[in-house]
Length: 181
Image 1 (cartoon, rainbow, N blue to C red):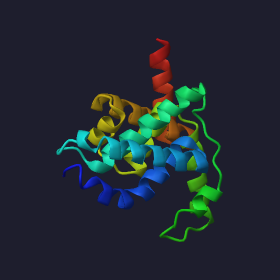
Image 2: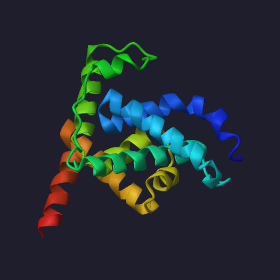
Image 3: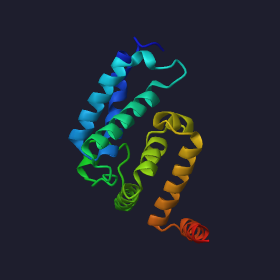
């Protein structure tokens, strides 16, 4: 892939970039601005895209770093928990009609993910929702792959504990005991 290919690839990536931006920003207008700024940056820096790097992973990295820069500019670093609005779900087509039990579980999972610290939430979104590999997520966040694996593990344990799964409660109590000792 060369930098001339990027403008043709961006339209196909926009829905995923916008969904990711919405999840990390928590605001539709912020997400739209974020994707627009990220696309402008990517087009300006298309020559920096390495041939062995996934263009989508590279774009996720730009969206994420643009968001971090925005948070710094706003001096609101504590905006790690976003308020979820069920209207967000209406913007995304659901390929399977879910019954009330599945909808309840879905809302519980969303609530649990919202409560995660920013670093864990972003890794969870990139790997579990966007389907990036550990290496792609590490590249997007510019952290070692071990950091991605660690954050994802802690995020999964925290979500499991919040959802009340028996195994995660046992692991959470062991982790607490280990951290106390």
